[in-house]
Amino acid sequence: MAEAWGFFALGLVLLALGGDSIVKGASGLAQKFGASPFVAGLLLVAFGTSLPELFVNARAYVVGAQDLALGNAVGSNIVNVGLTLGLAAIFAPLLVRMRLLSPLLVLLTVASVALIVFGLDGVITRIEGIVLLLGFVAALAFMLARSGREQVEVRESIAAYAATRSVLWMNLLRFAIAVALLYFGAKFVVQGAPVIGAGWGWSPLLVGLLPVAIGTALPEVAAAIAAARRGQGDMVVGHVIGSSLFNLLVVVGGMAALRPLPLPESFVKLELPAAIAFVLVLYPMLRGDLRISKTEGAILFVAFLGWVALELFLIAN
Image 1 (cartoon, rainbow, N blue to C red):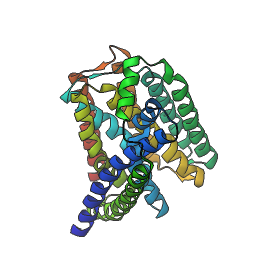
Image 2: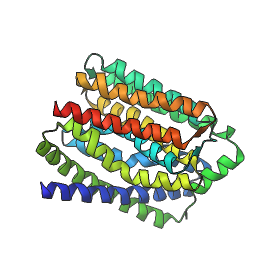
Image 3: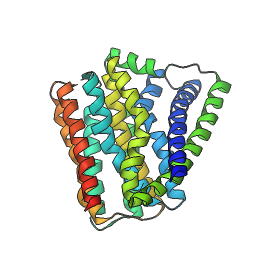
Image 4: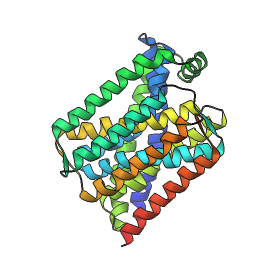
C-alpha cells in the first residue's frame, strides 16, 4: 500500500509539472505558427487545464480501466465547480466579464443532459460517442466565431495570459518535456490509484470519482485561488467551464467512439445528475450580477463536501 501511495503522489507531482509546461509550450508554438495571442489564450483558458486529466484517462483506457477513466471525467466536473470554483470565490469574489461564458455554460448543461439520455440504456454507443465529439467541434467553432465580440480589456487580459516567448526550439523542448512528464505522471497515477482503492474496498469507478479527480485538480485549485486574488475571474470560470466541456465531450465521447462505453445504473442515477446539479446551481450565479461572491463560493464548496460525504456514506453502506 505504501508503494502505491508513493506512485500516486509522484504521479500527481509529475502531472502538475507537465500541465504547466505543456500550456506554455503549446501557447508558444501556436503563436509561432500564426495564431494571435488572444486566440491562443482563449483556447488555453478553455481547455489547457484538461490535459493532465486527458493523459490520465487515456492511460486508464489503454490499460483497460475504463471505469476509472469514466469516474475521473465526471468526478473532475464536480470537483471543478464545487472545489476549484468554490474555494477560489471564497478567497476573492470572481467578477466575470467574458460574454462567451454564459452560452458555454448552457452548452455544458446540454452536454450533461445528453450524457444521461445516452446512458439510460446502460451504454454509450459508438455513434453517441461520435455525436459528443462533434458537439465539441461545434462548441469550439462557436467559441472562435463569437470571440471577437469580447470587450477590449477582456481580450487584452486573455492575450496577456498566453504571452510567452515564441522561439521554436524552446517551445518544442517545453512540449517534449511536458509530454514525458504527463505520460509518466498518468502512468504512476493509474498504477497506484486502483491499488489504493482496492485496499479500501472501492471500485475503480469510485477511485476515479474521488481520489483521482480530487488529486489531479489540486494544482488547478491553487492556480485558481491565485488568479482570483489577482482579479482574474474570467480565467477561473473559463477554466472550469471549458475543462468540464472537454471532459464530457472529448474524454467520454472519445472513449465511446472507440468502443461502446458501459455505464453503471447507479452512475446514471447519482453521479451524472450530481454533475448537472452543480452546473445548474452555477447558472443563476453567473446570470445575475456576473459575479460569484464569497457566500456563493461557500455554497458551492459546502455542496461539494456534501457530495463527497454522500459518496462515502453509500460506500460504507
